[in-house]
Image 1: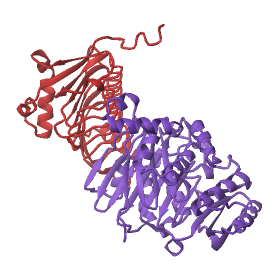
Image 2 (image 1 turned 90 degrees about the vertical axis):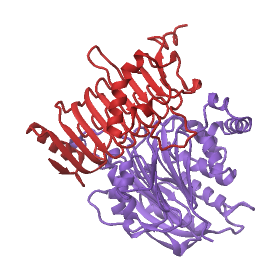
Image 3 (image 1 turned 135 degrees about the horizontal axis):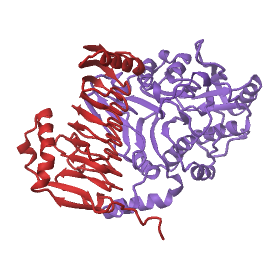
Image 4 (image 1 turned 120 degrees about the horizontal axis):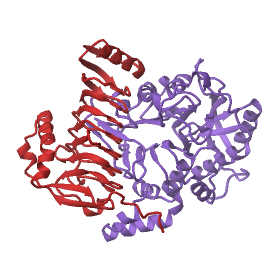
Amino acid sequence: MFNLKRTNHKPWDYRKDISGCGLSGLINTNGKRVSGEVITRSIRTQHDRGNGLGGGFAAYGIYPDFKDHYAVHVMCDSKTALNNFESFLKEVTVIDQQERIPTRASTTIRNAPLLMRYFVKPDLEADNPLFDKGMSEDDFMVRMVMKINLDVPGAFVFSSGRNMGAFKGVGYPEDIADFFRLDEYEGYIWTAHNRFPTNTPGWWGGAHPFTILDWSIVHNGEISSYGINKRYLEMFGYHCTLLTDTEVVAYLLDLLIRRHGLPIEIACLALAPPFWNEVNRMEPERKKLCEAIRMVYASALLNGPFAVLFAFNGGLVGLNDRIKLRPLIAAESGETVYMASEESAIREICPDPDKVWMPKAGEPVVVKLNKTE
Amino acid sequence: MEINAEGICYRDLNRMIRQAVSMGEQSIVLRNINGQRYIGNGIDSKIKLVVKGTPGQDMAAFMKGPEIDVEGNAQDGIGNTMDDGKIIVRGMAGDIIGYGMRGGEIYVSGDVGYRVGIHMKSSDEKNPVIVIGGKAGDFLGEYMAGGMIILLGMLSRTDKNVPLAGNFLGTGMHGGAIYTRGPVDKHSLGRGLGIREVSGQDFDIIMPYLEEFGRQFGVDVSVMLESNFYCIYPTTHRPYGNMYAY
């Protein structure tokens, strides 16, 4: 665990700002890539929604040269942790490229852990201790990430998808973007987060986004049902190690959408289901569906206030809790769709959108990438 | 006077505005506003502010007198605990508009978000009013203790099937009145509320605000009156008085 006292917070220079986390995201539906500089300008507009204790980004389409490899981003608090991590990774995967994640010297981002990335393919040989016969590559990667985050002291995998990556740490997001040189990356989906930690520590692993495979999530609010969700996920082999409620959402998405095969809209119905009194007024078929989802996925329900953006290689989704206790606004301009906590964050990078709207509570805004073939 | 607010932090911007007001400035145009918070907060003279762009959270909080004309959409929390004056939004506005508002008037041409008019209140001297040209999200007038909300649903950008007001309408409301142009679904109403069709005296109450809305946004009052209006009112001052008494 990193020393939590080593943050940028200066108690002697504290002027209170009423805050909640800030979100911003964009997707070019035709897969055209834009520089990380764009999303950085957007999230910077919402600077005052955070307090410098967490900022982060997820970017899709950034590793075209390694698009079939899993890009493993890891943070380690010591050389020993890194060595232990590396020898384990070598044992279970084939590493085709490894490097330090490029960073820029920064006056605002201090005490960064060791940050490395590896482009790997699972080594599915018979002597791989993590591999079970018939397991998919994705299942293997999930098991590997869980194993590392649980059992390798001081090492945390914070990104593990194909052709995407998460970049995060303790600091304001615009400083984190500068630190990770995000202006040098191009992606067709970007999400960004400005953190104001309330219930859990502001440490490098606790910054958003949270990811597993290519699922990434940024969140404003709090998941009051964290305990129930966490125990439910443990039954399926997911372990929450990052000390923050939002982590459960990343794993729930993987479980519900990838493993159980639910369509995104149905998965969202499980995460933010309509109230029973609404269900009772529905058409019989819809009612039956909603009742079934609520019964089967009772433990996947996210209680508490939230606005989230989640992304995967195929799209971007915005979702609010059922009574909209956190803000979310969306806009569209040509082939690009934007979502953010505040409209100004969208206007900063798209001054005159074709359409601006306020998504309804509990109703996901699902934007899928147009098929390229 | 004019202020180009591009790239200016809200603290500096609001300092500039307050300084100009203290020097006797009567009218300030703010250009290139994008996300700056707290514009016009606590100003207690009858100046005029024109906001060009998208003002940030809590615009006009504790405001006592000014008129703010927003040429764009407004974000969340405008008119928070506002005491007097007028806000005109030529576009949409976000959540918790007029939170705890105790005086003055807010006119929004388009749709508004969730919890608009929450905790609005009135006194012997003051009766706050919010007029909405579009539709409203859930919890309109939640815990409302006084004042008036007029919901027209005429200038909405939402689909036709989106209801005029969302669910939990007037939940916990125990004072004031919500006027809607057209009916609302019974199931969306909070507990302890009555609804009646507007006629006679009620029209005298809302007419000045309909006329002002019409003047601001170019809507003919006679067109507004083509539909029936309904008044939602509390039938008790303590709708949940027995909730915890067994």
